[in-house]
Length: 475
Image: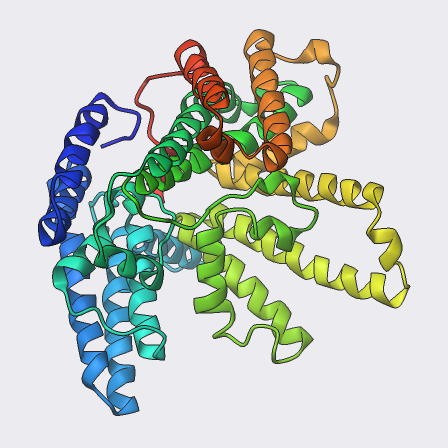
């Protein structure tokens, strides 16, 4: 079930009536059944995977709470890792690694054959797999007590607002919130619904308006002028941001309406002045997950400079592969790993040359931000392209700089609309920090009417309602 579908517009009010009309266990049952309906709307067979993952990690969590020996605890943790990552590998990566091996051996004259799995990748499997893994790892580390209630744990795993595309919610944050009933509060309704509405505007107005231009260019880059290709790359950077941030806003806002608090997943990432700052702003729940459960356990920056660089590269390569079973995603992650390594090397040079004061000036930070944005867009080319050939062809055509005048832009009306929407978004996000629209909506009825009215009109006049899937559903 998509957020931007008629089915969801019917489902949501019915769910909220039942949710607020029940208490205690009945409310948890309502949440669980509603979440299963929401997820099973795509394919009811997918529910078996969520149920299996829930039961396995629930049982392992309970066992971790009573097993004292370190050997036994490690075996339980390995069982959780094997079951969750095994499901993820089977459904998402088996065919990818099989084809890669066949191709690699074929390049040296060795023919291999093996089975391929004719299966559909379940929607959101990467998200709920990481969510349940964080629970068992935290219990193993002693940072979290095992959850005794199967019902509550099942709601934690399957809660529908963030089930399909995040944010990845930690058990330590969400399980305590499920232990009490949340009454209907005007503050929660206003702040939550304002974030939901903003998410729909990002998705249906901006992302879906940019999508046709981006899709047409990436399908056939050879026939495009350099400036058209460059514009499409920038458009994609904002398309994927508004698409994914829009989903996160809707998920966080829906949870807030119900009285729950989910962590922020985006914080104006294209205003980042460094690559580490970018990852502190982009898909925050994933980047913090990779930091806490992969980068730090690998050694982080505690084992010397060389090991730090290796750990950064491994973390970003795995993060790239998490997004999709294709080498283009691995390259995308590898580029970000190289960016982070280069940033650390540059920081060492700046410190040794005593340029710290210069690097803190507005011009230096603005220049650094522009470089970060350009290199992030370069990486997005590989992320969006269906294969390396398309990515290399597109970048090569841009590098020729043939047809860089504004008059060479193809589909100028659609391009002008896209530029206008991006400009409004950038200005709005630049001002959001001091306007604080959600807080003002609560204290100022006039601002409330103006804010909701403006977003509602933008959605009605400029929105694209074709039930297009959110980009991160495929991950």
